[in-house]
Length: 147
Length: 147
Ligand SMILES: Cc1cc2nc3c(=O)[nH]c(=O)nc-3n(C[C@H](O)[C@H](O)[C@H](O)COP(=O)(O)O)c2cc1C
Image 1 (cartoon, rainbow over the protein chains, first blue to last red):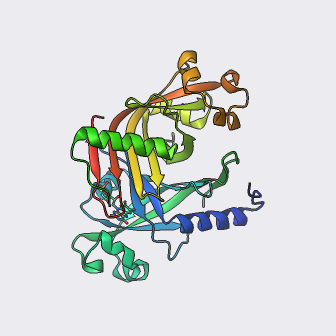
Image 2 (cartoon, protein in one colour):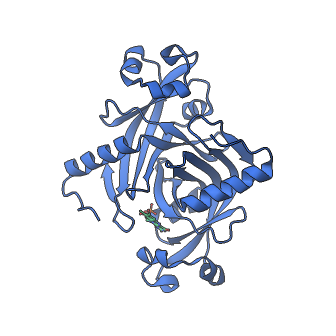
């Protein structure tokens, strides 16, 4: 079992590490009928600073859902390392070409075949409200409020 | 890439397989302040039949949250196999000793040291409303409504 981090800065560093390693998360939103729905998403962590960034289609269900209810959860599982992270935040959609260029990576071609010129491509920014993580199966949860 | 299942029964079988293999999921609930929060949970899949079962503490945040809003998401990530499952459902808490005995496994001792006699232990049943799964990174999503 890992040593518990003793300071908020340690905990923050550990979350950044866990998130960076995971790369793929589950993004949960609330559907208009009230169901909670999630889907795997590639996280663009190039400039991790408390906001999480995703590429998405402007007309996708998730983007329509966050226009109605911006509350989302971004969940990371790393079963091999027995690490889990739950990020609660609010999502906002908006295209920013310069930022998209900094965040782009070639793996995204799978979902956006024409790269940044793919019709309908947009960016989702998740502003983090709170973070919790679990670092080992029996490990105590570490809370980071107001990340 | 796996062959897409051609029938609903195939898809159902595949989801059962993915869920059984994953064992640990992220259970997402809505907090009273509206945040979406998730935590890793061990799934008790011994009698998988469209309902998912978890052991929990009756006074835990998640149980209090589902009393207010029973909508939950149960998300599974298996990055090694490139498989993801999202289950939307409604959760209900209720103790049932006979069922708990059938669902119990010794690994649960980590969280419930006195086994089924642990004070405050209860069962959570998630009744499945809809399921989606992704079976490979570029694979199309498969929808199973009314599981
Ligand atoms: C490993 C993996 C990574 C994915 N990454 C993205 C992504 O970065 N952006 C995206 O829009 N969809 C991505 N998808 C597809 C989504 O999971 C989802 O099927 C799609 O975005 C439509 O979701 P929605 O209808 O709920 O809006 C990914 C799928 C997988 C399996």
